[in-house]
Image (tube, rainbow, N blue to C red; front, side):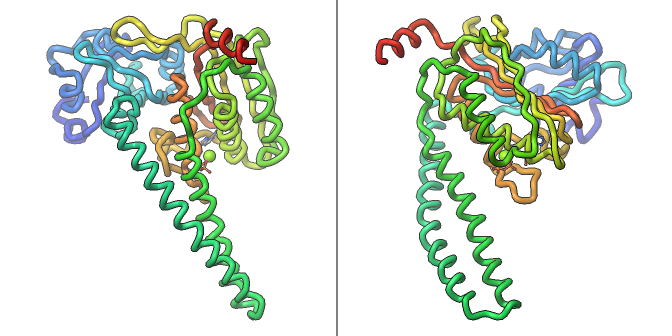
Length: 361
Ligand SMILES: Nc1ncnc2c1ncn2[C@@H]1O[C@H](COP(=O)(O)OP(=O)(O)OP(=O)(O)O)[C@@H](O)[C@H]1O
Ligand SMILES: [Mg+2]
């Protein structure tokens, strides 16, 4: 791509182009600002030396290049060698008709206002959630009145008019459902950090899925039975898995297969610039054989109110992402038609947590 391409130059998202050996070919102006370096200085340098991504992406990256499919990584810490690493979402795509060139787009979560780590953001996020919660509560009461009145009215109506009152009732229910989901966000407290048996979590979610929204699906277990306990909050993790199973079930046409896979990856960690970082060795993959993520929302599915479904509110994955990030974990997604993989990486319960828990029981 030539540097005088106006689209490349005006893109507000930092973007980099690398060659088949992962050496930097080009930076757009936003990337020059983000990395505080010019294309001239960066050209030919290995990207992994200049953009330190604290997520073990090697395998997924290689697959993306080999299969020509895009790769999305959520909430990875990206270091540029100067200053503290920044939490970012990465969108990586193979360049069509090229010799293994890959395009990187790096959008900072801080800009999107989702970084709930620093104090200022935390309190403003809290007050936004508090506001939404209050509104949700206030709207639910009159809405119940409206629904009730419509139902009363409907008793003496002709068939034609009945359709209108039914519409009122139905739409009001939909709003109530949305409000309940908003309230759920506000109700989330910080997760307990207790030892959690991941397989219990998965079984609970699996059973309730099969009884309800996932009755048309086959859910296959592919568990590593020796998996040690995770550090976390059972109820919140059940919610995460339920949301993922629900999405997979809704994406499937009539029937489909979901595979839940667990395994241990002992060196998987979120590295920080100082060389430290928390180990996230417990891996859970929810794999479905549905149509895959709709292309137009692929990069934004973890943001609130982004939905590819007619009646979706788009809060499911936002909640998942919040819970996993509160757990200090990571979520990523890899999707092509016929195979969509949501991967959760979680910390292991430490000796201290296990001892503390056993002491209190
Ligand atoms: N396994 C999947 N396969 C295909 N598309 C998916 C999958 N999971 C999520 N998506 C897409 O991502 C979108 C966002 O999902 P999310 O759970 O955040 O919202 P939603 O399911 O639309 O609404 P809600 O969960 O609030 O009812 C979905 O609408 C769907 O288009
Ligand atoms: Mg959903």
